[in-house]
Length: 195
Image (cartoon, rainbow, N blue to C red):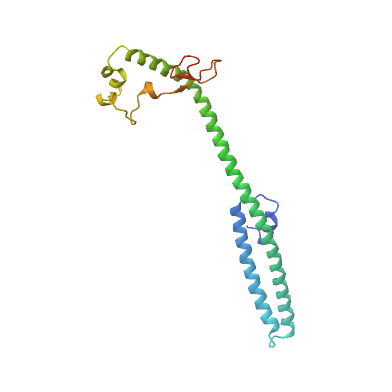
C-alpha cells in the first residue's frame, strides 16, 4: 500500500530521489494544495453563513483552520522539495558529464593504444615512398608506378590536380618518437641541416 502524501514528503528528505520522482511528488503536493484551498474556502463559506447553526460553525471553523494549516505545510514542502529537485537535477547532470568524460577517456586510451601501430605503419609507408622515388628515377614520367597504380591518366603528370595530389610531393610523415636527431619527419626525407 502506498504511504500517504505526508509520509512520502517526509521520506523524500532522507532519500536520494531522482528529479523525475521529485517532479511527480511536487505535482501531487500542488494538487493537495489546491484541494486544501478548496476545502478551506468551502469551510469558510459554511462558517460565515448566518444560516449555519453554532455547532456546525465550530466544526467548519476547525475544518477551515486545518485546511489553512495544511496549505502552509504544503507551501513549505513545495519550497523544500523544489530545492531537493534542483540538487537532483545538478546531481544527474554531473552524472551525465562524468559518464561522457569516462567514455571520452576510454576512447582516448584506445586511440593512444592504437596509435602505437603508426610507428610500424609509417616506416612501411616511408620505405614504400623511397622505393617509389627510386623507381621514378629509372623510368619515364608516363611510366611511374604511382601513375599506373592510381590510374591517374596522362594529364595528371602535367597538370596539378588537387583531387589527386602526388604522393612524393605531398605526403608528410612525422616520426612517432624523438630519436635525438634534429629531423622530425620520416618523409619527406631531408639531410640534417637542410630545413
